[in-house]
Image (cartoon, rainbow, N blue to C red; front, side, top):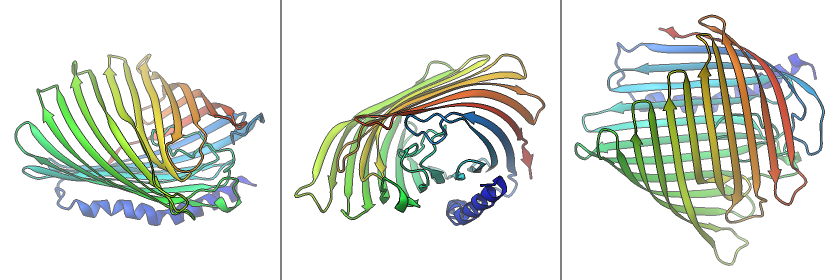
Length: 402
């Protein structure tokens, strides 16, 4: 297919997606009263990336060199005052070899005398047959070799409320709503179920000192799948956490707890239940020329496969400034996914690593090149695959105040 025709098709898909992006932008209405003197800060970014890769669709035992051109358009925005803030971005990928990827985010809050209200929201549209996203919350089905044409659409809304009980203690109340639906899966070898997830998570946060914080969280989540079996599930989690900073440059936090999960559908005589643990740890270190972030996480996420997935996630990012205009980055991520109840789902492992070196030519222009390795392994399956990508990227980004 000619590139121009492919781009026209992708643009039409993006236009259709704007109705969901509009729902996210309604978050602006959720937080009235921004200072009239506050200025909007915009950051438009345009990226052109040339890629050469040997298995773009992550097919097993396939090696075919493919050239791909990717255009990325990003618009970041922010408006803030002493008592309120609104920021987010809209991101669109157009490619010569695959369907477009689109996501928009918004985060906002407003402070009152003793409380704060806020909203986080995200809309994402992605192709399940392509696995080249570095996003931390990329969906569990991405990179499935049997789902070349399936598009996954996800809308998340996360309002929250915080109340200061005294000088050291705060009560946080977080809500969550997620709606996921799939397109073009009628011709796929694997079927996916549209689903919704709702959650509520109250937390009690105690400030022990200027550097030390402890917290206790109880979370309840409900999962409902739109499939022939009417799959539904509930998950209950209780966890304790601790955050501290050794210095202004080094911060870390850890939390852990237990979970109890129940899954039921029309084919079961009685509901299934399982127990396990959840945890999260992260460390951020900033040095004179180097920044490092390491994170470890084990949690439950809903899946289009028809149940809860238990995910173990290890990730690391590092960036280093060799010279004032010469920089380097390295990112790595390893995930393991396993279904806890419901339908059959083979344990899956995903690994990716990407070194990059770049040169900031001017204040607004940057040139970079790098390598990315992506690997997928599925237990008791012949669908293991890997993809190696070489890329050259030109980026333009400029901040604008209006």
